[in-house]
Image 1 (cartoon, rainbow, N blue to C red):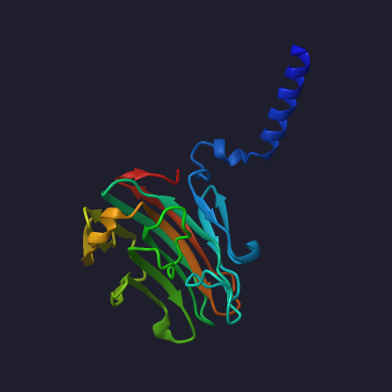
Image 2: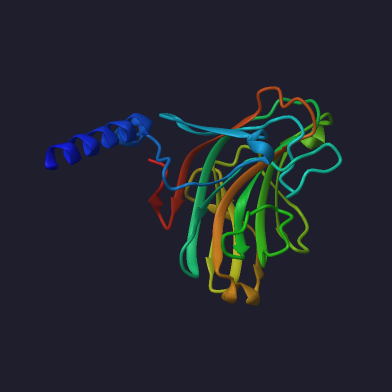
Length: 234
C-alpha cells in the first residue's frame, strides 16, 4: 500500500514539475508568481511574457483598458497587477516602450486603490483613487507622449518620454507622482489627498493598455519594479 502511494505521489510530482516554468528557478530571471493576471475578454486581448531581460506586455487590436465589458467593437484587455501593502510606500518603475505611430495606442500603468478582488481597470467605479501614467502614440506628433494624472478629477501632467524612473508614492492618505531622468533626482508632478483611501481594502500596482487598430508590434518592457527600495522583478 505504501509503495502504491509512493508511486502515485511520484507521478503527481512529475506531472506538476512538467507544468512549472523553469524560468521560475533560474537565478536572475524575472519572477512570475507574484503577478495577479486579469485576463482579457475571452482571454483574447493582450498578452504578456516573462523573459530574462524583462516582463513584456503586448497589445492586441481593439483592446481597451477603460472597459469591463465589450461594447462598440472594443473589449477589455489583459491587466497585470501586484498588491501593495500598508499606508506608506514608494513604487519605482523603469520600463522601455516600443509604440510605432499609426492609430492611437497606449500603455496605462500606475496604482489603483479600491475594492478587494476587483479588476483594477481605469473605469472600475469601486476605485477610491487611481494614479495613472499613459505612454502613448498615434497619428499626430503630439500623440507621442507620457501623461500622468489622477482619477477622479485630475488633469494630465506631461513628463519627459525618456524619463528613466516613474515614481508613485503613498504617505497616509496623500498620493503623489514624480519622475527622474537618472534614478536619483526626482521631479514632482503632483500630489493629491484621498481620505477615503484609508478604508479601501485593496491597493495595487497595475498595467494595461489600449489599441485602436493594429498595434504594429507595440510592447512595454518592465525592467525594474522597486517597492520601498526592494527589487521585485528579479
